[in-house]
Image 1 (tube, rainbow over the protein chains, first blue to last red):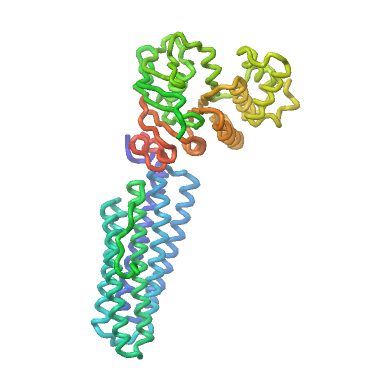
Image 2 (cartoon, rainbow over the protein chains, first blue to last red; image 1 turned 90 degrees about the vertical axis):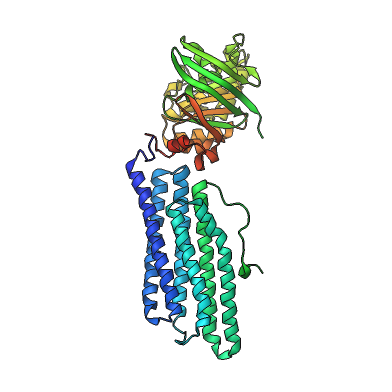
Amino acid sequence: MSNEHTVKSYEEELQFLKDSLIKMGSLTESQLSDAMDAVIKVDKDSIDKIIKSDEEINKFRSRIDTQIMNLLVKRAPMAIDLRETISSLKISQDLERIGDLSKSNAKKVKPLPLDLPDELLGNLKRLGELVMKQLNDVLDSYVNKNFDKAKEVWEKDEQVDDLTYIAMESVIDFLSKDKKNLDFSTHLIFATKNLERAGDHITNIAETICYLVKGEYLKGRRPKGKVTQE
Amino acid sequence: MSSIKIKSKNLNVYYGNKQALYDVNLDLNEKEVTALIGPSGCGKSTFIRCINRMNDVIDICKVTGNIEMDGVEINDKNLDVVSLRERVGMVFQKPNPFPKSIYDNISYGPKIHGKGETKSELDQIVENSLKKSALWEEVKDRLDEPGTSLSGGQQQRLCIARAISVNPEVILMDEPCSALDPIATAKIEELIDELKKTYTIVIVTHSMAQAVRVSQKTGFFHLGKLIEVGKTEKIFKNPDNKMTQDYITGRFG
């Protein structure tokens, strides 16, 4: 008994779907990283490029939608194939949302002054790096169908929450020193919150991968950090 | 939780030297639809033929182990096979109406089983059976026409009406829709949904989608063995056995 479908074209269609999702994932990764860099370096020149790459991600999303519709109609997938198909639909939605949040962060760069203090950006940078690592790990767990790694990402979102809280605190602290900082501080607060929300989409993806691999949803409550506890 | 209507324990079937079923342990719940799936020759039809002792008609067939209905051994030599088949009706792959009128197709069974002694009683049985099989409206004005004059889908519903005319407890369906178009198939499936309120139904099917649509429980057979049985939803979303998964996803070499 082989692991390949008897119908070769079915096998190819499923593989094509997986490949599309992996490409979409890596595009989302680059965009998130570029948007992070733009904020940290207050690099206003890269804003347009980041906004443009979001259009690419959205195109991937609609292409994946079409592939999924075709698979459902043509193959009526069952068991692991059904889970693979439905999971792709859900993961591509979460990736698209992460793309939107990165785009939103890129737009926040415009009003930022070029001389932001390092301690203010330091915490945001740490948060960004953690969210990047989370996205990277969750995509790895998708490629390798690694349940444990996906679950680890899911649990680690607690740290994203904690870092979000710390980054928010430092912006508020900075703001309280001088009311003139109000305008761009607000943008930094939104940028921080966007990263936290990207983290939430990553945990959604982790949950979906756990379901994809084992056919069961994760049980119990996800550990929550400071920012979401109130 | 439904109660168990049919229970098989270590059921083995041999056709001469060839073993067709190996230690099958399978429970069929009352007033539920159980679907049996698996590649051709895997033993699913052999299994359902044990339930109404249809294997008796094959000389070289030998059955060992137990198969019970309501706790009574079906294989018991002293069991009255005629009354067993009155309790367990069967519908086959190809519609096979008798070469008689629509009316006679239905009334034949009750007559030989001594039901419906008067004409009006028989009329009532015919009408009820045709209504239950969702055929009444289509044939009520042409009951004296030959059963074979109906379309394939109508003939299959006529066969279902014939099966239920003797008021059975169990209905066995061996690929009842494989010769029918999608509309006729949909009608039979809707009928199965309705019939399960009254009868215990076992359906052998090669259509995964049909098994998902009509059944509550699914058993997967392979080379005479029951590989996996469970809630239909579980079997088709997340089966435990790799062989089951390979079969239902079309990975069987």
